[in-house]
Image 1 (cartoon, helix red, strand yellow):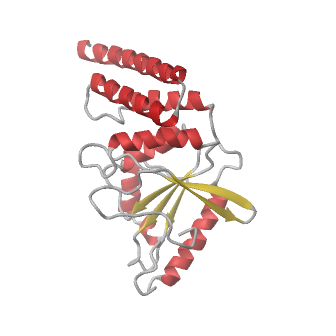
Image 2 (image 1 turned 60 degrees about the horizontal axis):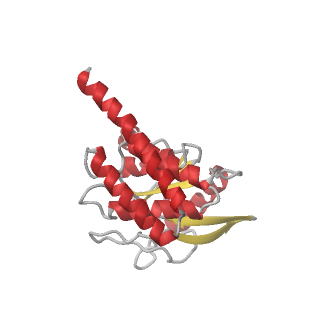
Image 3 (image 1 turned 180 degrees about the horizontal axis):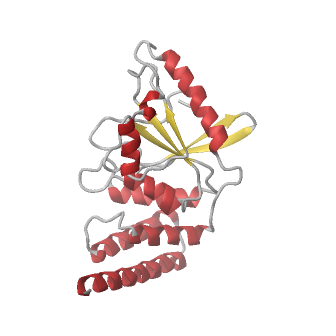
Length: 250
């Protein structure tokens, strides 16, 4: 939508199509943006993007980033079950809560007044229930329609989204040193129990070790860095085991 052409893949199928971190260049006024269309995290066997692939791509994305100025969380008219996990992953875990986040609500073609969607109590309450706290909410139409029947709403939405981006983005991108950033993401993800296939830390650790090894093979990450990540994994496991021991015996 922002690029005024169809470049990002979408899918209604059972399996997701955003497996890679696609980068696009976009300019607003004198400011040049790099936009990354990246995979979310759909948990469990019913997830559209396989868990291991999504996490793998998040690590690959971090290796490419010099910093983050803004997060745009896209959702189609309602909050799905994995929305809270994705929100927490990108906003709290990856960006440490330091980067502004916009909720872009699409699929509102039937709304006469697009902003009325956000004015409804049930929608605001749903955001509160899932603990989604956007800096701005952009109620938009991102689909022209087969015969351009939504063109007026589309144009208005395009201008609205551009203005919100201009207003919201960090002038100084937030970032951390790469190795520290990756290690911090892993440790936080472990403690908030977000990427688990199961409720056992042993299975989680085994899966993440396999992920680190495949990441190293693909990206030529030095063994020293992989060893450092594994050490943090073991430290996180030890802390979690202590919490569980205290819980079960208290």
